[in-house]
Image (tube, rainbow, N blue to C red; front, side, top):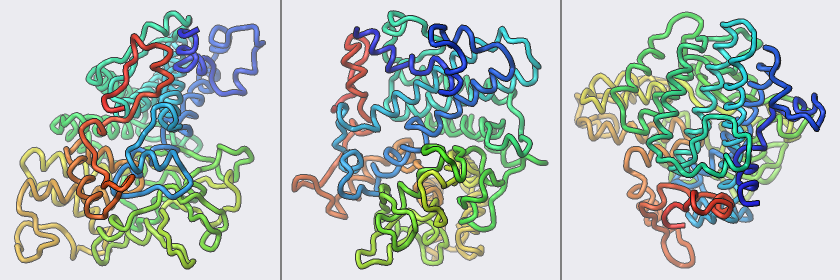
Amino acid sequence: MKSYKFYTTLLLLLAGCKENIIDLVPVSTPTTETFYKTSDDMINALNGVYYILRTNAAASTEFFYGDIATDDARAVPGYPDHADFDNFTLNPTATAPINGRWNDAYKGISRANILLEKIEAISMDNNLKNRIIGETKFLRAYYYFNLVKVYGDVPLILKELKTPDEAYTYGREPASNIYAQVEKDFNDAIPLLPASYPAAELGRATSGAAKGMLARVLMYEKKFSQAAPLLNSIISEQGEAKYQLLPNYADVFRYDNGNNKEILFAVQYTPNAVVSGQGSPPTSTFGPITGADVPLFGSNANQPTLDIYNAFEKGDLRRDISIAFTTDANKMTYVNKFINKSVLLRAEDGTDYPVLRYADILLMYAECLNEAGTPALALPYINQVRERAFGNNAHNLQSTDQTATSTYVSGQADLREKILKERRLELCFEGLRFFDLLRTDHLESVLNNYFTKNQVTLNGAIIQIGANNKLFPIPQAQIDVNPSKIKQNPGY
C-alpha cells in the first residue's frame, strides 16, 4: 500500500494527458499504450504538459514562495496557508501549497517523460518531432527547476514508471544532480526550438525562452560566465524574434496585450473562458477584498508591504502601476499590475502571467557583467530599465558624479546592491524576490532586518529566520509512504 500511494502521488496521476484525451479510449485499456499513435496525438500530449503550468507547479502559487515569504508582501487575515509563508511557520502536513507544488510538478514531469519515450516510435515530420521534443524538455526542465529551488534534493525521474514498485525505489537526489539535468534539458531544447511562432501558436517555448531560463538557472548556481553569453545572444537577437522593452511599463501586463515583445515566456490563460480554471487567477487572487475598486472581489492574497512601496524612488512610474490602495476607509494596498478591472467572473480573465521577460534579461546581463568585474559595462543595461521606469534618463546610474547619492555607483559591490534593488522594483510580485535574495546570499540579513525594523512578530517575539529557512519543507505525505528514501529538510 505504501508504494502504491507514493506512486500515485508522484506520477500515476499523469499517465495520460488532458482529461478529455484520457476519455478517448476504453477505461480497461492503458492510455499510454493506445493513445500515442500520430503527430496529432503528440501535439495533444504536449498540450497536456503545458497545461500543468496553470497548476500549483508554476504561476498560480509562485507568489507564496517568491513574494509572501519576503519583505515585499504579507498575508491578509483568514488565510492560514498564506500566514504560514508570511511567518515562516510552514507545516509539511497542513500547508496545502507545499503538497500542491510537489504533486503538480511531478504530474508535468511524468507527462513529459511519457511523451519523450513514446515520440521516438511515431512516424511524423522530423522538424515537428524535434520541436515537440524541444518544448517537452523545456517544460520538464522548468518543472524540475521549480522543485529544486523550493525543496532542494528531490527525486530525479526521467522515464515512464509503469509499476508501483519501480516508483518506490526513487529517493531524493542531490540538488546538484537536479540542476545538472535542468541545464541539460534546457541546452537540449535550445537548438530544437524555433526563435518565434506564427500567431496561432504564440505562447509556446522558443529558443530565446530556453536560453533565458537556462541563464536564470546558471545564475542560481553562480555560474555567471556561462550565463552571460546566453543573455547577450538574446539581447543581440534580430528579426521577428527580437525582444524589447515596451515604452509603457503597464502595457507589459495588460490583459489584452499577451505575448508582447517584452515577454519571452508566460503562462497562457484564456479570456472569457467558460470553464473555471481556464481563466487567469491574479485578478481574483491579488485584487482587493472589497468591490469598491474593481468589479470582481479579490482575496488580496499577496498584499504589498509599505516597505516595498516606500522603496520606490520619487518619480518611479512603476510604483503606482504595481501597487494601489483601496478607496475605502481601510486604504489597504493590493497588487495592481496584473489586475483586469473589466472582468466580473473568475473565469473571464485572460491576463497571462509572465515567467520571463526582457527587462529581466537586461538586469541579469548587467549582473553577469558586474560579477565579471566590469561594472561600467553593466550600467547601460540597467539604465535601459531605469529610463523606462522614470520616463527619462535623469535617474540613470553613473560612475562620475559622487555627489548624486542615488545614482552614483562606487564600484562592483555597490552596483551589486543596486541591481538587487532594481530587480525588486522592476520584477515585484512576479515570484522572484525570495530566490533573488537567496542566490545572492542576502536572504537572512535582509529579511531579519525587515522583521526587526517593522516589528513583525509572532507570539510576541520578532520573527527571525536562519539557514534552515532557505528551503521549504518536503510534503509529509511523501515521507510517510517512503520513509527510507524521503527525509525531511532540516528544521521542519
